[in-house]
Image (cartoon, rainbow, N blue to C red):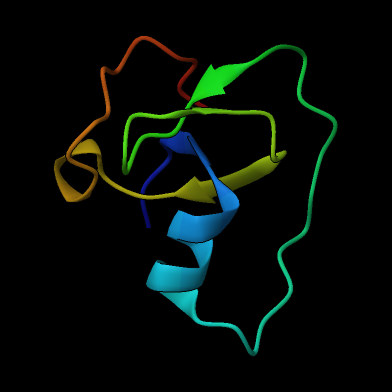
Length: 64
């Protein structure tokens, strides 16, 4: 499993995981960029994945 934690917008969550699962949402500190589509998001959804799996990941967020 990857240690990279990436912000994801809700539409990208639905495309990646499906509509039958509800994401756990955290309170984001600020507006972030979705690592999958590149649009701003404050969804509070984060996933662990390799940056190579997410085309819009700029790798400028925390690794943890």
